Length: 262
Image (tube, rainbow, N blue to C red):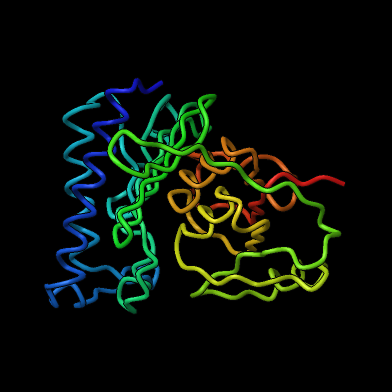
């Protein structure tokens, strides 16, 4: 488990990568040059720069812990299955939002132990907002240097009218719509990248069904932040928390939410 000094250094490294992303976002139009990866998702120099900065920090400070990053080739599962700990990194979650200049993108970093998330960090570079959680210690929003605010989800029933429900800015799925149709006049809130998880953890939204197979690095940090704030992020089929470092790094359909009561 991470100690306080390690958490502080990790937060500093993520902020440093966020500053590099913002330099591209504000001043360097070369960041808008897009490369299309094999999965048809976009890649920019901002993605790769943030990835290099964070991976260099992690390798220097935690040399014994391997890294799975969206922007690195993933080791074969025959190797990965023997890993007790690993980092999951998305150095720029929401590249489409970055390119569309919506401000809604993040850096996501999570520490995995035996297929479960034990620490997670989400940083919003445009807003200079850091959110993190450590297993058993709570979830927090850093307001200023050394000033933190605990995060707490809402408690609600799915029968309530007008629930605040997160939906993706970039992706809409028919399977997700089926879940929305079961709700009573939901108030749909559109956000990009991991801001949807943050809204759940802060109690600004209640429910977020997502019936699409996004990647492990997209959800891991958000999962523990929501869980430590009192909510859940579970497999939409079996209701169990998502697990990580699977043979396939695709997630099942999932539901993120505050605390649901009957």
